[in-house]
Image (cartoon, rainbow, N blue to C red; front, side):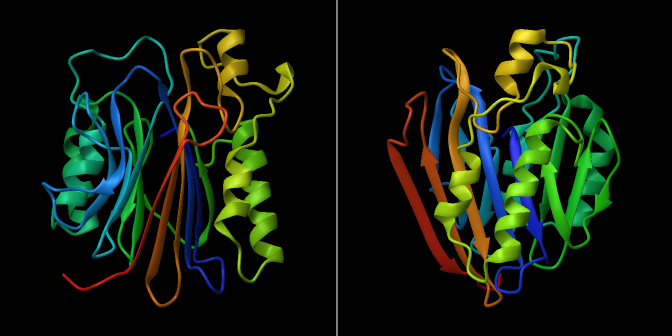
Length: 256
């Protein structure tokens, strides 16, 4: 996942709204969001190369999502998969804070990451390039740096989602997908310098990324209302200009 927008405790109808784009090399094998056969109650995509995932939710309301931290020098090839951090939380039973305290001890074994996870009572953020914190109500943006790092794509997408939620009592998934589909790029002078060179900074600067080998492979929207009804929609692109597949799950959170 390379772009996450999170409205938490900010909207009267939907206490949690999540919008996310997953950016990855097209050649990396993965499966679309599904109800996992080997972990009952887990709804997530799956990285078929390492077995982890980038975003998921469970029937009991456990939620987790992850972005990589862009940095140089190149990451370690032998480090454990960051996608396991999401997978293991979704498949487990530990309370969110206890799980994060365990990650805190071993977080430097992984390449750079930022992770948001929790349940319907508490959400937490942790990075092995920053601090751990419990999230208070607010509008958050996360890409390949720390939470709310003001990259142009984060500022633009947060402003768009904030505007939508302020003017609509009942925002529609289609309106949120429209924000995620923005392919515009900022001016060169607005770009961060993350060590990948100007051409890649340009490619990676848009909300929806397109290039011959790497780009936005899927967009996801999760909306949870005050009755704990969840709607989870994923649209898969995989280097197509328009989505060629849509997956949708709707359910109400049940107790463990």
